[in-house]
Length: 120
Image (cartoon, rainbow, N blue to C red; front, side, top):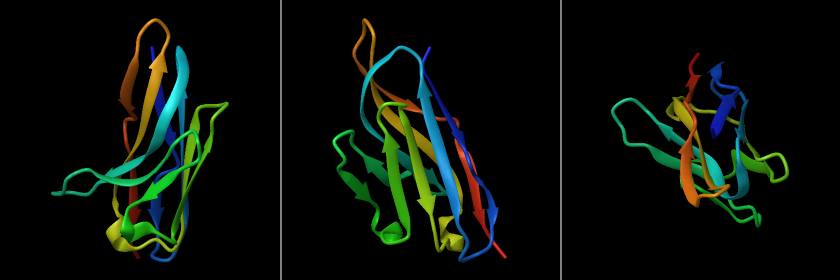
């Protein structure tokens, strides 16, 4: 069974930093895109940052220059370093991975979500 396990959310003051981590486990042969989405109350889930196993990255405009995504392809992990956090970054953050499974095919997986709250 494949799982994405997230950690690192919490409460931080504006201007502070947090680091989110996500590890994929199970019968995984390969990964493609891994990254983070977020969903604020009353809003749709949106892409925050994604990184391919080739190293290409994509960030939503509002986090460029503040957030950095990194991956360890060998460990199937993806991290999100969030600096200069703003109240508008408050949301539930979801880890995302596109995975190739043994005896199967490519599938999209989501973590359970971790709350990030930016408030004074």
